[in-house]
Length: 182
Length: 182
DNA sequence: AAATAACTGAACATAGTGTTCAGTATCTGT
DNA sequence: ACAGATACTGAACACTATGTTCAGTTATTT
Image 1 (cartoon, rainbow over the protein chains, first blue to last red):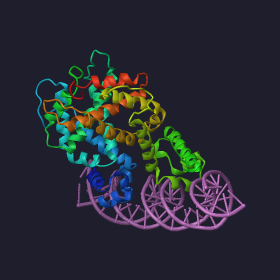
Image 2: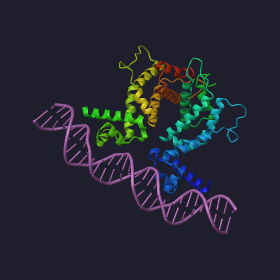
Image 3: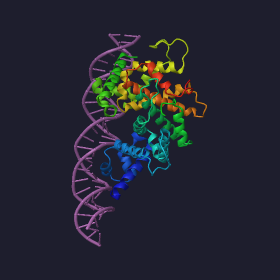
Image 4: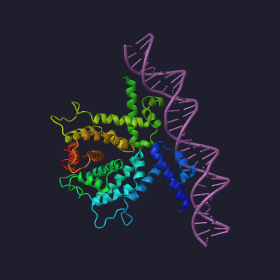
């Protein structure tokens, strides 16, 4: 990939992230981004279709990182088998690395887009780990409610960052009826 | 209040609700609303400041209803004391009455605004009922995660409406560790 | 029937969008 | 180091939607 492209892309995302905190997503114009990034207007459009596309790209980038398989590149080493608690802890470590970007995104309506992506990934994760209690709660219900719970837990964590990933994962699992997520 | 105002207001909200399902919130223009409602453009602006204002008004109206004290006007009669389960069931009855409007709002990005209001009200409700487990989970955590869980449960319910309010309240309480919400 | 208040609709200024294109700068491969 | 390819510039343009204004019309209240 051409160095110029990378530079421009970074400038756009950097400017956008700054502006998110300053004025909030809906108040940002393309011109704002272009001015702050110090690039030509047409360059923006050769990288992104629109503001939404930029936001989606940013979120996707973050989630690519956060939900990455957790191979060697992981900050935190997990040797041995992975249960749901480990998996969630691993995700929380990755989230902590991107904390600043995430905080910016969550600071305005753009947070809704972030949360939507997050819930989607979580549903996917839970559907591979969920064990519904015998009493007859639909598995689908548990997955949706669980994703709602964990994603809001993380939003809470971003505002209360004096807890460790292990603690947050613990809070989550301990507040759920034993047996639902083994 | 002048009959004309009521009529115009209803026409605006009706048109808006229809359009929400047809094209989604962000694609709706003021002109769309005005055309559909068959009113003058300036009339719209004498009722609402902007599209956002209209959406907020609509949500507020719904939540005024949903979180109403539950006096005599309630569809479902609760005689005697009210625990959290009863309270949630009562809310679910009210939600079911407004199901169609809610479904329209939830069908596009406007749903995020609805969900935000919903979580806010739920946090308020939980903060008056939450009992955190002794093991040291912060009450604040439980309230946020609980609101995330229940609000997503309701979103799930709107798409799977073959359950009763009692069942949904049951699913919610049963999937949470006993003792947290007594 | 008169006074009041709400709605109409066209006109207007404003702001942001997304595209185009000729010109310039920067990269990449050999 | 050079040539060809590729990316960026920035001004101009057409377009769409916004929000306001106001004189004229219609409905409501007393």
